[in-house]
Image 1: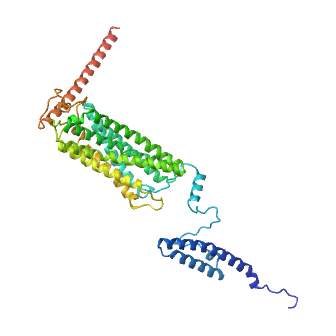
Image 2 (image 1 turned 180 degrees about the vertical axis):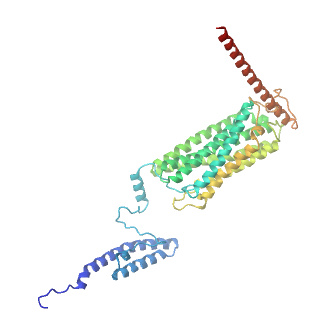
Image 3 (image 1 turned 135 degrees about the horizontal axis):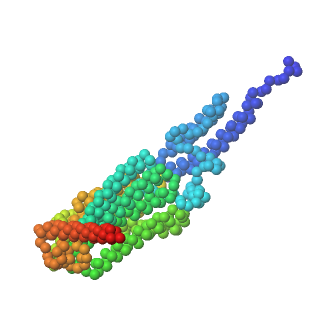
Length: 448
């Protein structure tokens, strides 16, 4: 009893642990109290109730009460539950960047190409939403490509030249590539190179439809106003527009690619200016067929209308106005979205995926199928070599005289039949030449 070992004082033995826990709790409280004050000031300035601060204080108090009870180590955890904001330790090397400066430093360490810094139309593609939608669109554009290429090949075999069917086929193939790249982007969301390719194909393909509509508007202008439509100033003006479209396409691709390889604010500002100019020009180009056709129809005419192709001229005017209105709506929406800057984590309603697919691919599908199913290869066909007033009215007869509107369809059909007969005569001539050569070779072999 006197020389035996004295039992250890449990209070003294637990004291270091309690003191250490108290110091850790105090340090944690001081760290988060500073953040709580900063968040409270920000919420007060924005008019938001400081619910997060009370939740954080209740969380710390709950942790402190659990530390006083001798419970299992798992219950000492102060991890946030579902629905609460995660609290990062500022001393940790794995913590997210605090502010824009930290983000820029992390991006510079990662190196180019850099991810997009702002919200874009359609946002980041996902497997659950974008892959099935892009697959359906891919199928529809494949049907459009097959339909237009079939029309082009059938016309080519008959000697009927209509290159715009091949142009629409090229547009459909470009849209197939864009949807394929969007599916790949959804499967590999961190691959910035795939994102660059998907954005370029999405923005560049629609230019072909703008050019097709502008050509149709030019033909209507030459039909309703022959002297004005075939004048040299307008001819050079349309050629300048086509050249400007090519230059604008180069600008958009160059600026779009370079924006992924720089973080310089001044350079990004200049790139944005280039992109805004390009998207405004394209929106104007998409809208331009509407005033051109309106002026062609409404201006007083000093010469009779020179109809071309099959069908009535009223139907052609309605087709061009309808498709131009749809294309101008899509281009204007994209231009408006480009002028409004939003951060990537706070997109607006117009950045939604529904807006992306409706104002891009849905409008384009309506336009391409409207042209293909209305047989625009016959309606907007003009005689080859047309270069002056009166050439549209030849209709294949070559006399340059005016043809009545009622007989125009029959004249054009007669030109189609004549071209088909000419193609058949050429094929028969080639077959006779082949038979004669084969017979001569056989005779030569027998004689030798």
